[in-house]
Length: 387
Image 1 (cartoon, helix red, strand yellow):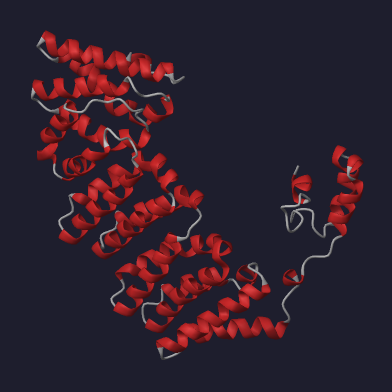
Image 2: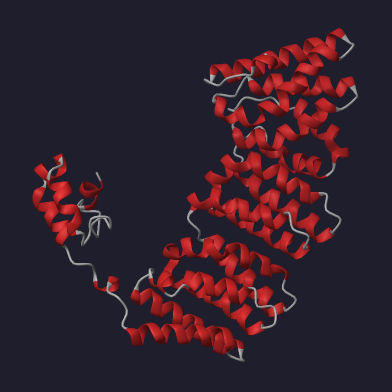
């Protein structure tokens, strides 16, 4: 399948697995692909690699090594930037695998951890930025190797280094492959959990940028994002609170449910300030749900409902049960509601069994039955002890 896909008109080069690999020839000659497409297989296995895959000469390799040294030791920032740019262009000409041959990720990490040298730290960040500019998506796997250490430099005491980090990572996240969103999130969450308020603010800004670079992926990941960002809304540092609120606002731009879109600012405020939870519930009570309720929509609503169901006030519990009942009737895919089963079903079961007022218990039973039906109709499973 790889061989056949590699010889389609859209492909510019054969599949790397078979290129210049005579050892594969006896294996694929006996396969059904080899019997039907012997000429193609022989051509692929005997094809010479493109010129950019040739090994670097020793002189060229040493030249690139010297450029990295200059980029991390030059006295002037402009000289470091020029050397980083020249290094990236040289690597682009020689091929992305040169990054590995030079052991560049290890060198960059070592430079970023050199707390005694400003030139080393700033130069390493400039090299990462230049590599991403020169190699585009080909640089992403290598940037991921050094990403935690680059994020850590948000808290650098030297402003030039911190500014270089922000410029580098903003450019990276603005153009990153959308399918890398799930891989990037753990690094951002780790930054949000640090002691440094500057690192928290930096990673929250990056999350907001990622929401626009990968809206579909962020929409599916919103159930994981909302609790992490909400924790930072309660931070003691005003800058972190403001950044968290702005970041969640950017993430919620992926919500396209027309019934809920007007309520998003109110729901974000309720997540930031639990005292506003009742106001958000009243807004939800006044909403007529007519559009399909999907995962991004549930991600911003469920935290408000969870707090309401845990509230001592029975009328607040009733409001939550009504909203759950109305909303879950429009859930078409069990996978959308699956991340919230543990947050809603146990609370609805408690309302059904423990609230002393029969009317409220009835509301709880009805809401639970609607949620269970939505899960089962979509092909999902409900734990027996919660049915």
